[in-house]
Image 1 (cartoon, rainbow, N blue to C red):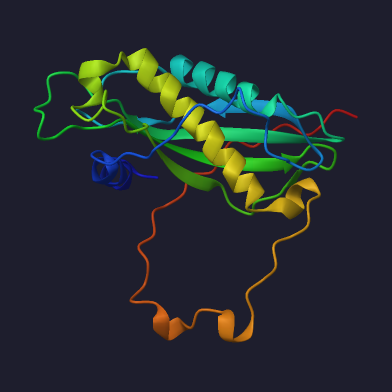
Image 2 (image 1 turned 135 degrees about the horizontal axis):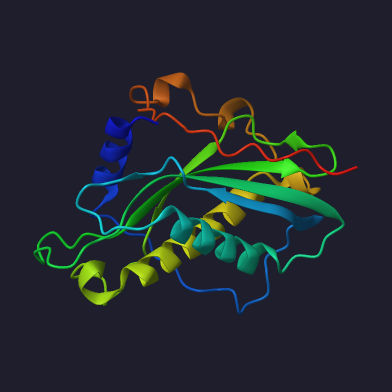
Length: 214
């Protein structure tokens, strides 16, 4: 993704937020035969929105690896799967922004999901996600005023891992669960019902994981 497109995505989402709560103390949702194999995060090509607080490549890689381990390390299935994440860009809400703006932090990542035994990439292209901070009374005036940048990174990493879990559940056949039934016939949306073409954002490829050891 080039800098212009990425900046447009980040700035366009900057004032939005998604509700989220910490669910790691709860029983994990069923994830078929899944067990976490490789957990790789790269942030060497990430872009930062100019008004963002700073964050290093190492900080993002360490935080996201920790969040993925915390969420997916709970599963002990019969088959290993590898998760590769590329950090495309971020904006950490800074302090001192007027209350009327109330910016929230945002993270953009691209993810790839692999069958470890065969080395097969299960999603044809890197799946891009735009991740927001959770909305609360503490962040309504702008999280830059109420949270440290370390806390912002931690929350965005947690939300990213949860988003990836939901994405895997949307593709249950990847982890040995029954596939979702396809919409057919009258239930399928018609082309005429779509009001114009959807805008597309270039997707950066997530890291290519090494071939599994023999």
